[in-house]
Image (cartoon, rainbow, N blue to C red; front, top):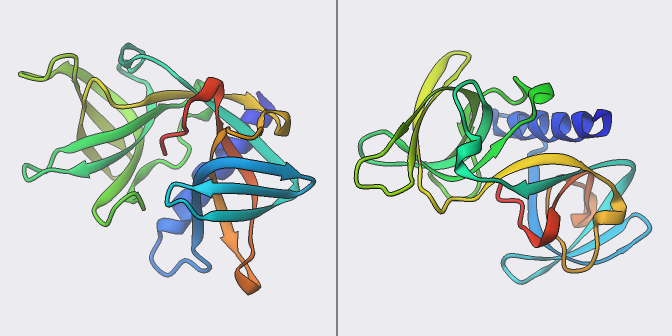
Length: 205
């Protein structure tokens, strides 16, 4: 649990920091499939089909995402969700990650996210969970966070995951990863935290 707390704490804190205006250097979000891991050098194929090399710090922490059902989102769950805003102001979730209780409060708030020009990330406490008319299996969440509140519609087929502890032994060829990295000189990219998809799943952040 301690390793998981460190990994998710760093993920949430760095993601939140990167969204702040004027933050420098801005973090690099790396999403891809592992090609190889040799010592501190991790090579992935990104979603765009390009090769990306990451240098892992000696203390790199690893956590894994596992797919769970929409029923796992309950009142008082602490969640994070990437979403897009509709014309009515409501958010439609692109993914939801349900934090363990020990992670409550991490990255709390509402901020831009890099999936698209208009996407956002909201970390907060679920006040209510309701059904959606004409949306079979969908749920509408009222999510509170310090300084604000968002209504989020979660379609039935949206990826929903939880976090568990993992190690670098779980970072194998073919594994899907998400990393919050920092760009250095000469185009080098380094990180000390990874999120891997367990059992073939893809971290949806």
